[in-house]
Length: 200
Image (cartoon, rainbow, N blue to C red):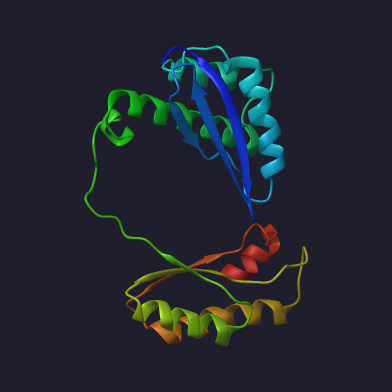
């Protein structure tokens, strides 16, 4: 690999963004720089970083590039910048792994486990819908689920909203039993005041 020659970004509905980085010797690395719901914003950040720092650079200097992208500007951090950097970082590691002829996890020290437990997302806004979906996924072999607990919330919502979330969760728990893990996601919809009421 001589230098980073080109890049291309692909927005994939409904919410993904993929980065393709190409080197002057024809190698290609891929990364996923995205914040859900902000693909266009992250795309602009990736373009800025690629144009400012990386085009024409040695793709193997991954740590140096990471530090330059992170600390090279006056403002640091935040989900948009960090997602842009992460996607670029992934693409550079992908390039290095391909050049070395091995998967990236080998470059990073080898596997840490042979198996990993995963959860299945279950959707729907009504308890009966979510419960039925949980039952179907349980039959497919999943032992952990993650669900949306509420529809959109007001900053301080009414007791009926809290009760509906509890009912939704209760319907899932009843459908899958006590041996299955159920995680609840509020997708940033709950204010601190509502989070306290919902958690109780």
